[in-house]
Image (cartoon, rainbow, N blue to C red):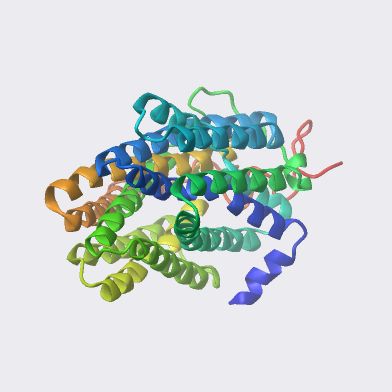
Length: 419
């Protein structure tokens, strides 16, 4: 199982791009956790914490596709690093002003969210030019999803560690400083500097003119909603049990389950179309979320959290392939950024809904939001089965994607390699 992943990591530039992207994404990957803990530490309510996290998520949702389109048009270095710096300054403003002054606090999270760099979509755009073969790119997608779960496992622990050693404000500053360093590492790497998007048809909708992509985004909105609601519900669960560390362990267990599932999923090739496979994976994901509503003791709840995460990374990895099959030509970074956006919007709605649900009905109602969201994601995929059955065009399918994996470059455009 590990041999395939090691083969990818030994490829020139691959490890640096993966690690740099993960470090660069630490701010966005831990923002909801850090904002909730910071707001609660400063005396804010769950509703205010959820609202700030929701505004951050919505702002990210606005910024990601716009910045993704800018990357497709102007290249990665001109967009990724400046955006990372501005986003970090926004979070720094929140840490300095605190949540008590509402206008500056909300302005800070808006700036931080809008300028979150589209590193995730950028990495997936780079994989074909770095790795070459279709099978290796598919395995890289799975490895990417697994690596994200490492970040989601270690990220909460890092935030809680920084909070315990210093303060929630210091955690915000350190995490965002690391994010800038990660973005810098990526944009200084040769594949990032050399990459150019494939030619694209001028259309104001960009990647959103693909019906299949819209169907996928609709489903993953609810997956994001489930993850966002878990953030607030798990904090409430930890408060119920009188230990802040319980929250970190629940999030770590969720990430560990996803890491295990993703590692197994990426170790083999799967028969059938990715669209059909995605329906089965999301069904199992939804099934894993439902038992969280029972809110048993800490040990049992941690085990349920790990079980709930098992099918998360496989679902995400499979969704990457579906995006690649349905995105219009020349919109690769934008299309992947829209997927990030659906998570951002879903997570924002999840935190906003789970906060009042916890305050009015107790912790278990926060996890009710999680389970219902997983079921809704499955229903969207079932309702749009016919739309997803037809990829947008042969030009975007995995056998020839944005980076022109087979080397057939149209005249006048760069393949992503230096001449």
